[in-house]
Length: 137
Image (cartoon, rainbow, N blue to C red; front, side, top):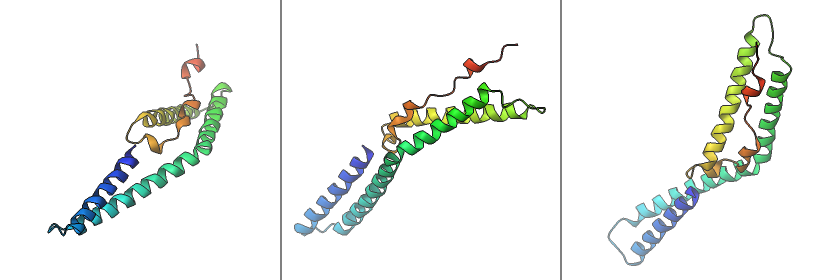
């Protein structure tokens, strides 16, 4: 959406510059051409970023799914237990960061302004529900 807005702004700037040039307006039409070129460059860069992000979405989703599986495996098999009890804190920190990344991906996909830069498949990855793995003592 935002790419279309920037592209439309560039076209309007070019149209205004062309009309000023055609009717020999005293206003500086070179400025409109300059702003139009800048807007086109910005639209091209944003379009490239959106294209790259959306064509590599399978790899991104697979990477996060693999990370989720690894964290759940460590949590289910108590791989965090050690003498110092430092492993549990590190695992919980990694799970918190993973869940925050997944939620951020979902929220940003729904955002009108930056949604085009985020893949659609963030809902395929489930956050890790720590209530299922709560220890009862």
